[in-house]
Amino acid sequence: MPFRPSARMVSRANVFDAKHKETPLPMNEILEGLVEAAKLIAAFDPELVEITLRSLQVTITAVVIAAAIGLPLGAWLAVMRFRSRRLVIALLNALMGLPPVVVGLIVYVLLSRSGPFGVLGLLFTPTAMIIAQVIIVTPLIASIAHQAIRDLWSEYHDLLISLNTTKRQRVATLLWDARRALLTACLAGFGRGIGEVGAIMIVGGNIDNATRVLTTAIALETGKGNFALALGLGFVLIALAIAVNLLMHSLSRTERSGTW
Amino acid sequence: MVSSILPLRIHAAEVKRRGTRLIGPIDLTLGGTGITIVLGPNGSGKTTLLRLMHGLERPAHGGLDWSIPEEEARGSRSFVFQTPTMMRRSVTDCIAYALRVAGTKRAEARARAREVATHVGLRHALDRSAQVLSGGEKQKLALARALIRDPEVLFLDEPCANLDGRATREIETILTDARSRGTRIVMSTHDLGQAARLADEIVFMLNGCVRELNGAETFFEKPATPEAHAFLNGQIVE
Ligand SMILES: Nc1ncnc2c1ncn2[C@@H]1O[C@H](COP(=O)(O)OP(=O)(O)O)[C@@H](O)[C@H]1O
Ligand SMILES: [Mg+2]
Image (tube, rainbow over all chains, first blue to last red; front, side, top):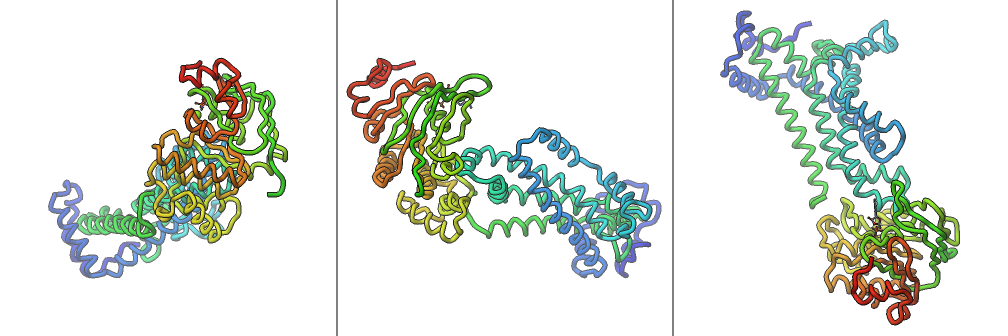
């Protein structure tokens, strides 16, 4: 199904014809893109609002789930001593570099009608996109959390042992005291998720009014040669990522001042 | 306190790291009351001995027994490290942490933490981040964190090693005060003056072994070993 742009979007889209696709993007296209972004935002374009909210919904849900898995996993790997620990950490670091397209493909196969989870009917829904993003984001969050907590653990080790803390208390203490670094881990996960296109394109299908998000819309418009519109959406995406980062940091800073 | 964890009996205990001996074999009984000072040159094994007693090092040979099972004795001991760990929390929360992990409710733990902090002279810094304290204040925080559990035995590893005279005196006052309230103190130092001011009993370490164990007066006036005699005279003993 095609992206149905609102009236003003169509007028911008018509600026381009097929020839433009081959030629390199001129510098002033960037400016045009900025103008386009400003116009889209200023007009509060309903289509734009919808896909932006969907982008946020998918990625924030995925990051929350990934954090719930990745943060305790990272802490657990930092505190526990077991034989296959190194293997698990190496695996985690390898998974961090998973190509999203491959993740998308695997989730697609699992969720497709003939696949093991086909009966759930999740393919081409935002849920499928969330599942794919959880798989992409969890190793990243777990790996960054593991490094931060490992460093803190080497500092806290003797104290926590001398206070006879239980393993559970140690993990909880490290998670809490490393909260700044863990917030950064979550924001890195958010950054990876919000800008990701390969996996959600495959499992979401870029369906108008259903699974279209900012990145898949950008891919679509670029494919159609609507560079200014694509760039405009791109700038909205960047602004969104910056806004979320600023918001999280200001929230964490107002919590308490001082050096931690 | 239900039943005393003392005396502690150490029998032929050795601590090894990757096959090499750090200390031992050590035979020692820790009982009675007061302050025991572990003296000895750098590298003689003072830190390792304290860590062994508190259960932070496992003996490769021999062993040690508290008068009640280790599981129960563990909660009645506190340890102050030479370089205290400052958690990413406020001074009050850092001190309260020692009670929180032992099961005390947050409000009660924080109230007790404020009392103990005031007692050690940190009243002015209750809401400050522990990270920004001065060296002496950090050491006092560590002391408060150890004392808040009301330990029967308190271990301290060179608590005044990096402090100036005034901070040292303040710490010593807190320690003599704890002693007078019945806390059994075991503390290492290489400061002879401090040992003379505080000690009821001296454990003199050399090359990972207890070279001499004596009452403080006897040790300082008539040391039994030539090495201790040389050490007291400021000579370098090895
Ligand atoms: N982690 C360690 N690994 C190897 N050797 C160590 C370690 N800790 C201490 N040692 C060695 O054990 C001996 C005793 O050290 P320590 O107990 O710290 O002495 P002290 O506290 O009297 O200066 C020293 O020779 C020291 O080098
Ligand atoms: Mg030492």
